[in-house]
Length: 138
Image (tube, rainbow, N blue to C red):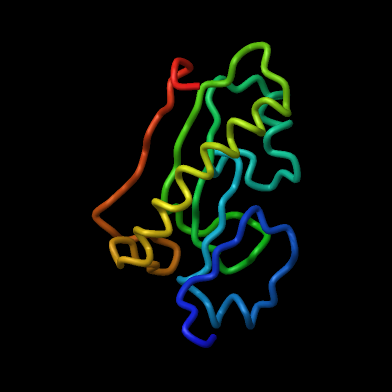
């Protein structure tokens, strides 16, 4: 551990051992390209959102829960964007990546500063980030 306080995953697709998850519980953060719980079991949530015809999607920063595969840990922060009718998967992917780059550092700061604390299946804290970016913002 050598001074490491948080483990930050970026759409991590490999399996983590239960021992690792237990050792780092409450200090494992991940980001997912949907507004969880929407498309949480999907291997292609962006494609699935477009195929489902959603008009709003976004990104979610969350703690890893009991399992590393369910994206079911407590939500730390979410931001949403409107999906344009002619948007391709690559275009939406790029916009979501930009949104992730804005949201993830804020969420990391909230956890690192103790403003949000892992409490089992619940997130405890006084701060919640929920920003909607309108089409004129991109």
